[in-house]
Length: 267
Length: 264
Image (tube, rainbow over all chains, first blue to last red; front, side, top):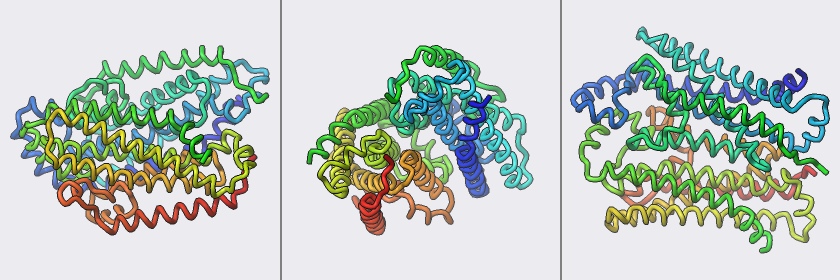
């Protein structure tokens, strides 16, 4: 419990910054919504004249920027980037920070098992991420309601999109933790977490802008595509399962690796 | 000079990784281009998308069915990767000494602190140039299949030149962050926040007319590939801003580092 509280306290400032960033992104993008909605109405007429197969080939059959939710799908992508960076930062730093700052010498002689340490740390990080998650939920509902001008939107679909955040964060948290344990020494966190989160982002946007799915399938940005949820009213289950499977494998693997880990000590 | 060589060697792994990342995206990108080449239907789809959205992905002004246009769209991704590399190297190369607790050793050497900063800056700059060179080569090699005209090679050359300037801006910003920030541990995250913040600015600036002034605050908007392709130039005002940022950052870095209270 002490470890949990100590860890959680150390996240507070970072959680405040990331939550603020997410709120600002949603706010700023939605203040441009009225302009976009006008243009989108013209676009829709054009789109209808194209053959359906072609739109599907470019992943554009699901998009609809004129609606509140359609625009939210665009905005949500930017929130996802922030959430991904935050979660992978937490994951990669989770256990490696003790060795880097030589505090493992202090922590590990304590009368707690390594399993308890990693559990407490994971839970603290997860709680911190959940707070950010809740802020995104709140900002989405508040900002959309402020900007809707009497338009209706599908509350259930919005809730479904926002529910994906939990798994999305867990993916980056657990994969980050696993990566940090697979390495002998993590010198600094940011390059690794950027590679993980931004790599996944560029991978998915590359796919959606320039054609077909190939490698993009490993990217969680793909697994929880809001456009798919809006269009179909359900999750893209096979892809969600990929994320779920990765989480289910990465967490136990982290426990095993940490239990066997040869800890770098100061002396 | 020894510090320069040593830094060059120490960072080589990171350089190779970035080259690998660029190679991956260029190869995958050009594979996708196969579907676009000489396929006019795509243009109709793109024309129908709302201007604000296209703008926010920097996809306007390019004819995706030609190699030139395709590189123009890839340009934004490449700029992002090279920008990340530059700002990370810049912030890391100075702050890592304190993080790895080697600063006691480095500063007891008979060299001035300013010499240290110069050598490290030069090493990071060399890496940026090598990365840009590799990107250039990779793009030229992948494009060769489509037999592009001299226009493409000119655009590629000038575009990569602009990206080197972009890298220099971010490199010096990173170096300033690395040498001026008291908490050396935060250098990396601050550098990345700056990079992401400016990237968002460049995206947001395209969304609304009233937000266009934001372009002045983001190097990603300084070197507009459309302008380079059509008129082979960049807006002079942005060049002046870049030069100003570079000079201020370098001066600030030397000043801050020579007075720095080191964490030992």
